[in-house]
Length: 265
Image (cartoon, rainbow, N blue to C red):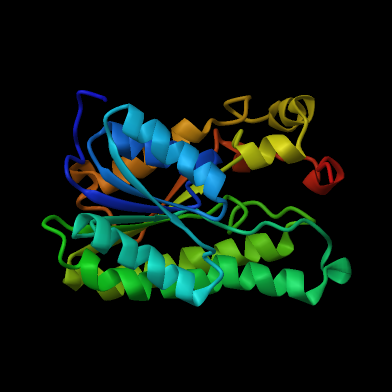
């Protein structure tokens, strides 16, 4: 494990930690001493993350479930308390990102995005805040949003972008509400990141094409989002709340082509 132990004995719950950005965040926290609850919808993916952490000498447990299901969210928070006796940090990374034009999108697909991306914010915050307010340092709620929320607007991602804008507003107002309880709330907004999902839907040459005009002319890595999250969870960020940290290589300062024409079904 990493000799730097900023999160020794801290208990961290990460949703959507079976793959991609969430997986990178879970591994990064574990490498710095945290006890990690890996939430994943797919058992096989989640077990692989837990096994890798344990093999490196870390502490991790798996909690399967769907953030779009109320009872599953309750179970996620309860599993952290049951396994490790506390909860210090929650990182909400899981999201639904259906691709398609509004006129063609089935209503149930939109509704699923509302539950996964919007309802889950309320459920997870409501359930986790009592434990977070008891953290020995300030508890942390960190939401993984997107540059699509307020800064870039891509046809084909209307419900996703709208849900992330909601997340940003939710986080800012919640930060004001729970600050007196000793809980900090912040957002990380990734840009074009080489996550598992992105690699499944965008060919490498398309990603290179989309990023060619970025000030940092490449796609980002999941580990770079993890670094931003760990900063916001650390003591170095103890005076930061209600903020959105954009990690996109400057993408929102550069025009990009409509992305829906490049996604693979």
